[in-house]
Structures are given as structure tokens and as C-alpha cells.
Amino acid sequence: MTSVCLAFAASDALADGFEVSFVVDAVGDTYKECHDTAVLRLTRAGAVPRTTSSMIAEWFRDWKSPLAQAVRTIYPPYYEELAALKQAPEAYAPAGLVRR
Image 1 (cartoon, rainbow, N blue to C red):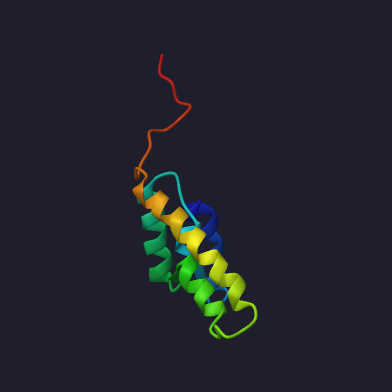
Image 2: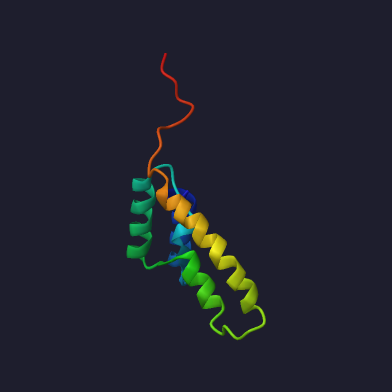
């Protein structure tokens, strides 16, 4: 969870003097508001938000590398999955709670 697991670990690392970045589209929370608030809190504390796409691109700055072709095969399925997620509803009703 962004607001607990990531926020506490990142805050502790920042307090210990480490540079911290996190992949914002690889974490989530119970509700969008919880996630967004945690991201805001982390960025105000000095952590750098990144996306999966930007992180991969940063790792492969030299697209002439022999490893780059493998990365090129990752991008199309990633963007297809991302597009499907973007079309999904943003919030769902809590599951498992039944009032009788």
C-alpha cells in the first residue's frame, strides 16, 4: 500500500539521508485518494516519483545496446495493459463487507 508500506520505508530512507525514487504506477492503495495523498506526501518530503516507462527508458539510455531489443518487446504489451487499466473504473465498492 502506497500510504503505509511505501510511505514509511521511503520516509525512513529520506530521514537517513538516502535519495529516494519510487515507481508511482507500480504501487496502489485501498482508494485512489489514499494513493494520491501518499504520493503527494512523498514528493513533498523529497522522493522522486517515476513511471514504469521512464524507469525502463532510463535503464536503457543506449538503445543500440544488444539488450535494448528485449526491452522493445516489453513496451507494446505494457502499454496495452496500461490502456486496459485506464479504461477500468477508478473506484470499486469494498468487497467482503455485508450488512445484515
